[in-house]
Image 1 (cartoon, rainbow, N blue to C red):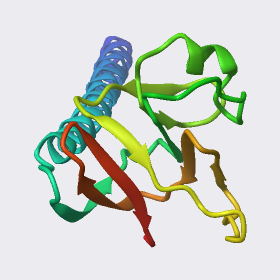
Image 2: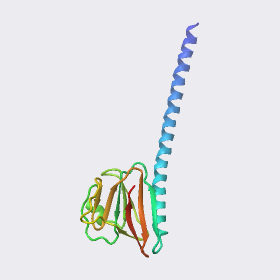
Image 3: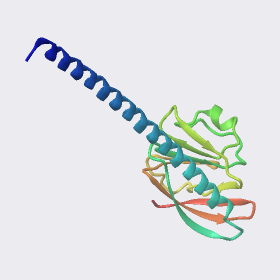
Image 4: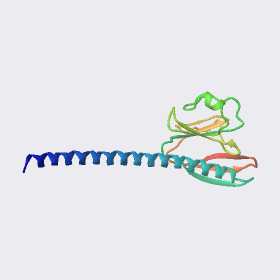
Length: 170
């Protein structure tokens, strides 16, 4: 084997490594982009299904609906649109309650959330004073926050221009 052949082989190996590295890099970026699109599609799918269920609930209709919450969200908060002053609850700061007309919030943690507006007023079924509130659940006369793990089942009852929502054990 001549020295020029060894130098040529090294050039081929280096060029091969560069090409393989570029393929891996572009492949990783493409997979990441597809995953980001999937997350957005899950969010849009949840918002569409939730709004569709709310808007299609007519007067005296009672339906039990199960919603698939997008994977990165761990908490859902429902807010009655005719709320007065609301307390600052974890993870929702007071400023987010007061400066919005949204009535559904999905949370990943303290910093990231997805707000959503429904077409009908939400009337929430709150636990009575004697009822025990589960860990991970917060409630008041105008909001309900529930820790979720993928699915949440709600009972929807049509009241005309509003929808009465109570939790079905999920």
